[in-house]
Image (cartoon, rainbow, N blue to C red):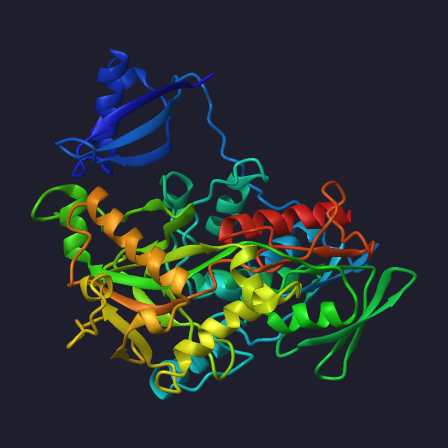
Length: 514
């Protein structure tokens, strides 16, 4: 059995295999020759005290022990016949990982995706950023890989009880991700690398008998005896399915309206809404590392902040070191922002969603008992932001000016390509969100000295942190209580919050189908 130890190394030594082996031998009081294979399990940064160090958790094998890596990640027997066909609506992380799991279980997946392939999506994103034209079916949210493809690729999750996290990480590595994600405490792939990985997953699904239909939007489904029989799509096609996994993501609002029209039971749920805040990355580095220069061996620093204001949560979300703020509207007439980072996280800015919890009583004041009231509240705020310029040029304000209720005379340079315009965000956000956010920023400035500054810019609005609607399902069978072969899945169904948890939920729903 391997011996597990932890060692600490300076940043400039933490990736040097020879130094790691030497330090392990010192820790075990053994000569380097008496140590066998060394397997790195986890790597994290301890910046609480000087000098900043990496903490490495390691398995150490004796020379007589043989370490065998698992060679085959997927055990799929190619066959021309499947004993079952399952429709999957949506080719995001939940849908793709559901398809992989179904193939392992001898079931044919048919993925139906309203958007385009990753390469074709890029053209529409370029038009969105440069010409400010939103393609309602191909954007940062819709298309192959879902919102996760072009929203950073962070793989950190607290969902350790949801399933096999390591298998999800291994899957990404199998299809092209750097194997550092297997050991990093906060693994990250990068928006620049995800498209090729997603394309590799697609090719694997097709090679093993699955189907993927792009530019194909589900418009309706046929139900008989509380069972879905087929799916009707925009191109006139009808797909007959044995079961249906609904993995459409949190921005597919038309699906919520469709389900509601057909009398399928839905629930509203809490979500969060606010802005995206951007600082110079150098400033965040100085605050977090407590040194003037980050140096060549430390990654761009991140942060995570949370506070309570008026018994309401205010928190940072989806922090992107060295990242970019992106326009994430899915139809004309709305303005939504999100953030992402490239794999090297080498941009000059750091951004994070900074949001306020929205509960049932908040939106019921405007929309009453309407089950879609939370969704309509979200839409209302996005439309308010759009109305400032009637475009996706975003309303923005310096942080201290927002706290002091001042319209900024100038705005700092920032990463939002479509452009920003100086605005009073207190007039755009609902009062309870603006006021709680204002106090939240004051609190953050006290806990993270240097965070509160007019060098930071608030860009509105960050509204798609999670789905405001939950499509309920049985806790054990994971199917909808009304429709026995409908499996609500992932972020859009209200059961995930990020790439990892969505992938895990996709796998869980695939197993439930079996």
